[in-house]
Structure formats: structure tokens, C-alpha cells
Length: 155
View 1 (cartoon, rainbow, N blue to C red):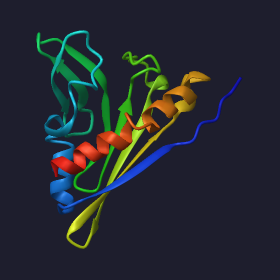
View 2 (view 1 turned 30 degrees about the vertical axis):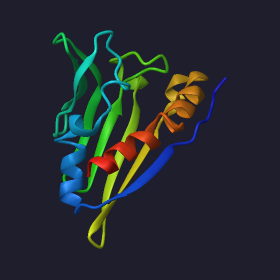
View 3 (view 1 turned 90 degrees about the horizontal axis):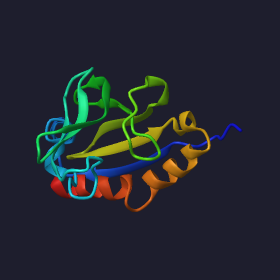
């Protein structure tokens, strides 16, 4: 059975110009990402890293030095847009198969002396019926809405 799932879209307004908002989201990803609650390693997370370049890794590093990939940077257009390949399954495990990756696109648009940061997570259909549950999870209070609020507070 083919299951159609819509994209998840959320935005926040941050009190930074676009270049600084982009830099906080990418270069300083670990400064605002909640490592205590949003990690996939069995060991406690020490850092969350998004390598700020096309082809860069998106991953976590645990306190024991081990690393767990989350995905990769598909496109990097500083300071306007970043497109990420999310390689996590509905069971929150890494799957290196590009055909099973969903996409996370983040846009940075100046609004006077602030920046509108809009995140769209899409492509859940690659997970079949389980994609609907994944979509629901990332759209819930513990998903992208709370993560973007943490990002906004860090700004």
C-alpha cells in the first residue's frame, strides 16, 4: 500500500540578520541542539555537528568518542538555504541508503532586522506506511517545533 504523507513545515522569527541566523543553524549547530534528548547513540551525546558545506556530514559524537551519522548536507547556499538528507529511519536508526533518506530544507529570509527561518521536512513516503508515524513524530511538540524554539532562544 502506498501511503502519501505531506511535508512538515514550521518557522520561527529570530532577532538576527540572515547571515548570523544561518551561521548559528549550521556552523554552531551543537550550540542549540538538545544533545540530552535528541541523539541516537547508546552513549550520552557530547556534541551535534553539521559540517557547513555541500557533502558535509550531519552527525552526533558521543562522550565515549563514537560517532553516529544522521545524514548529509546535499546543498549549502550561505546565507539563504541548506538542504539536508535525513538518513534516520522511523525506528531512529541510521540507514546509508540514499533512496531511504527524507529531506530537511531550511530557508533564511530577512524581515527588517530579523530573519524568518522556515524548515520543511519532506519525503516520508520512502518509508512506506511507517512514514506517516515518522511524520507525526517530527511534527509533534517534541519534534521540529520544540527544536526550532530552542534554536530561536539561542539566537
